[in-house]
Amino acid sequence: MISLVTINTTFKECIETASECFSREKWALQPSGIELDKHKSKYGQVTNKGVVLIAPAFLGTTAYNKLKETMFHEIAHLIVGPKHNHNKHFKYVFSILTDGIESDESERQKVKVNNG
Image (cartoon, rainbow, N blue to C red):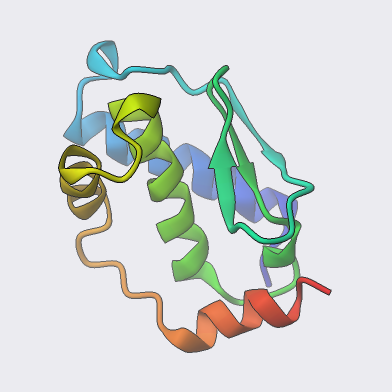
């Protein structure tokens, strides 16, 4: 089951992986932490201060790949910066970060159902 420890560990692992793929000196925003988000309609988001916010709906589920995919999505925003939104550059970075990660519909449903 996903816990706060799982979220923090996954965040650190994802940052490490992303740093191996893309030099941290070139990231548009530096990561400054991870917190649970209050927003119910998003899996995650990133603040302009580099904080990654993750939906608490992940807690208590087994949606590990969806959590990792979400982390990499938000880290891709840190790498490319807010002006790129979901353009080609963002999609390229995201595709490299998520290579080999498969989150299926059942994982998305676990998070959705757990969202209250």
